[in-house]
Length: 131
Image 1 (cartoon, rainbow, N blue to C red):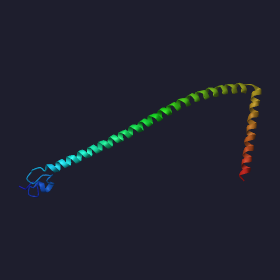
Image 2: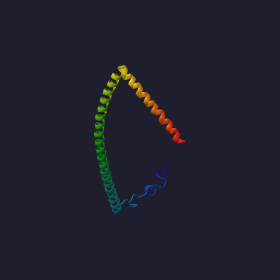
Image 3: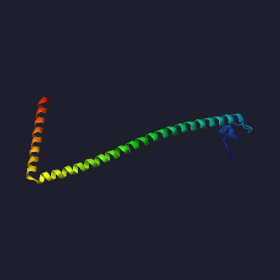
Image 4: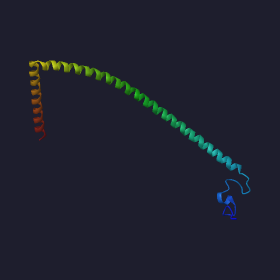
């Protein structure tokens, strides 16, 4: 029968002795040093994690404050928009009343004509100043 390991059955040569002597006795000082190192690293990782959690807490509080301010601003904008909408509705009703009368329609045509003339004059003076 063939041996299980190619090095004549010596597992320690193949895989290493894992901090043990060849006769199987453990080396306790190496294990304690390794354990202490691992505990120190774990404590360091926990400390870093706590610091990061604190940073996330402050960031989330800042975001919360920003959202509260934005919410207040949006409510103010909604109130202003509602007032503007009411004012525009009243203005449109008045404009409809003016358009229903012949005299009001003629006044509106004159206003559009004057606006159109000013627009043409503006374009002409702007083009002549560019040259």
